[in-house]
Image 1 (cartoon, rainbow, N blue to C red):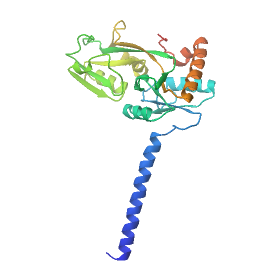
Image 2 (image 1 turned 60 degrees about the vertical axis):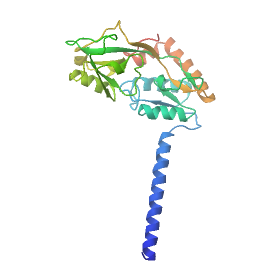
Image 3 (image 1 turned 60 degrees about the horizontal axis):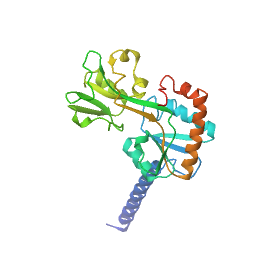
Image 4 (image 1 turned 90 degrees about the vertical axis):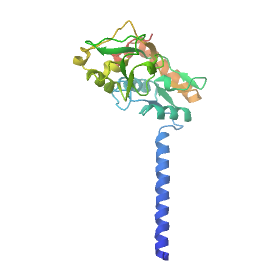
Length: 255
């Protein structure tokens, strides 16, 4: 190879090295997006259509925007897959996550006051049997990746099809691809259509899980201040009836 060829090869290898470094830095920057020392607050979440995520008109997005205005903070919501969400929370300090079960347990995490209640039901088509929690083995189910199902023995069911969101889960049920779905409320009511709701059954007296909706945040000075301000603003919204107004008709109370 002549000198010109060697020089061109050197330039090519140098260019490739620069591109690889740029891609690595871009990925790192994306994972660190918003994790800065500024006063903005960054909430990392899975995308739950209608409830929270990339759409600014989601119910909890609107709630956080209202609270942010009240406390003089910009609350940014970042939607991403569950595993990446957990990694960002574990590797950074001044961050929050939702749902709260994606946060680490222990003294490194603090929680906001609850702003809604979540319930989980087994849902099936009306013309089909409705499985119960004590007799799930003979049925096929659909569940959503990133959701918590630790309150049931999901590994014991005949088949469990995992999907990305409640919409896909409901589609499988409506197409008779599964016998039932395990659904979070308000997640499912936010996406079903009235004609779809008319085809469904669930036993409101037999919820698999009842819990509260709240933020999990790192136990740092900045986050302690934010959570205190968040709770104070939330209490004002509760007392004035504005919390229910913002979340209606998917506000289920606080306990």
